[in-house]
Length: 500
Ligand code: BES
Ligand code: MN
Ligand code: ZN
Image (cartoon, rainbow, N blue to C red; front, side, top):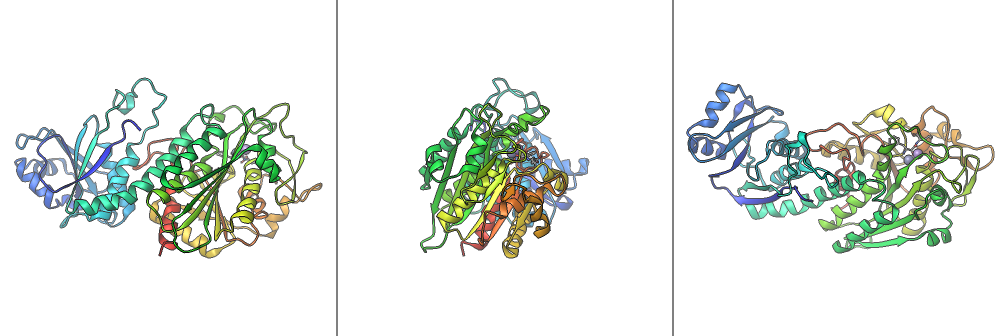
């Protein structure tokens, strides 16, 4: 996208022009390169730290304009606390805070280093990832610049050079980190895109682009889905003028004949609620009701672009939930692909209907090692956890535990909620095998119980991302409405446990 920074790694040499952004440790401790820059600028850094009381702690920064000696335009000091300098998340956040200081500058040198020694290749890649994630703006539909964002639309990308002890190693580490970063940005773009532009067909076209990376992309049409008897999913799309799509993305990166890791996403390109229509206020946010599918697509990009040594499959159901003369009604009973019947109580509980057939298809046709599904499934998860954790539900303690750890590593945190037969019972129907909506109580759990009826014995986790995929508060590495949540989380899970 226009305006995204161009990252490069260059050998350590003192910058002589432009803007230099320098990491500074706790207590205002300068690293080796920072000390040299201080010297070349006639002691400007040491003086600035002294007069400003800059502590070097995370969240603090200090700007030095046009130092008298050395020819630099600007030196920006960005603090990083000792603890943050030891984790890749802390370093990405440092990168984000560094990017915040770029302003209108288009020629930027980054000095990211520890108090004593330079950051290694992995650490620099984490900083670069934070720079790119923080710089992301969805401004495709703005014809003028954003006042709050420095005025003019930045169509010329900033050139960002990170000084590196071993630039070749840093480039190699960045190739992997960039794959994951780009995956998160793809997910953000898909979620931010307006619903008139991104219907099921257009979404599937975006998936098709992954073929360039060696992903096999299979797209099922309505006719093919009918043949498979996916009537739970198709019922949701019945009121839409646009046809549904079902996409299967395969990445075969493992030499062994391992069962694929399966990632399944809810892709409701717009959720009006259908006949059980939603109130008008805030309904525009329901363009993001494909956040689960967007994450799966971004993850498949990440795995393929970094050539992950795993077999993985991404499966997404793409529909639109609209009211119409042909729309599904409360009271309708549909037969899912599994053969189980579902009484529709509320047409706004549509995501689980899409996932019922997507999970069953994945289990039956793809023989997965596990299934992890992501869905903006319930408003109730926002009530429970707000924007700071996604809710997870699982039939497998080990997988749930690994995911929880990956959440802490990446900052895309999850919190496990309980399941059990007493909740399952709440989904029984008077007329069919089950109903699609329980009562008000435990809304996120009963939704998960519904899904569980379609996963059999396969190890499974459901991630409810209604609170985290979009509308999260802005932070060091995201300023966009769509967060791209889940791509870095699931990539971490794969890297930690399945590539060994
Ligand atoms: N897409 C919504 C859930 C949602 C709400 C996502 C807010 C993001 C932000 C989902 O389809 C839905 O409408 N769920 C209903 C279920 C209810 C009718 C059982 C809900 O949460 O109210
Ligand atoms: Mn809904
Ligand atoms: Zn929905």
